[in-house]
Length: 221
Figure 1: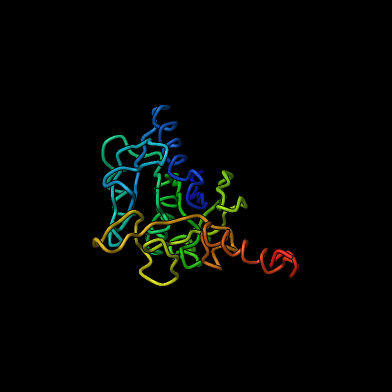
Figure 2: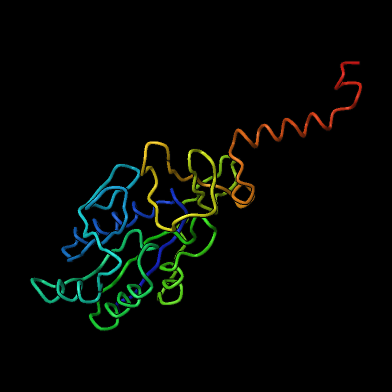
């Protein structure tokens, strides 16, 4: 029985690595798979931060995934599985199309993606996957905030400062112009809400410690 499976986690939780591992395992068994991605760090491949890559079909928001996959499935030797990386960026309609792939073509779909955006809200694609998937699986590789606690949120940094507004789909490590550097960091809920980085948190902690000193110690009496 084919299924639509959704695997989610924060950045650094191994989503792309697991997608590549599933792709490798299935192809090694002689099964036919297609690897899809959107807005990956490298064009035309799925890439893991561990350095592993595999060729992939890059899809745009306007692509009808059911028609694309059906055309591949009905040509050659058919398809056994579709593996979707960066699925948070897919349009909700494309998630419905993936559900049709499972139900009508009997092809397994493995979707990997972030759950929430830098604004702390569900990505539209991830929201639809939670609604439509047969199984939902949180990846168990726990990324950590700079404070050591479990990271639960993805923070967007513009020139090193956390922001909460802006375009939803912006890939990290991009330089739209020489004056703007966009990157991402992992935060626990407290530090995502506060927007403080490690240096700012340490400075605040030192300031609080100074405020708590007895008056005679503060002035060296």
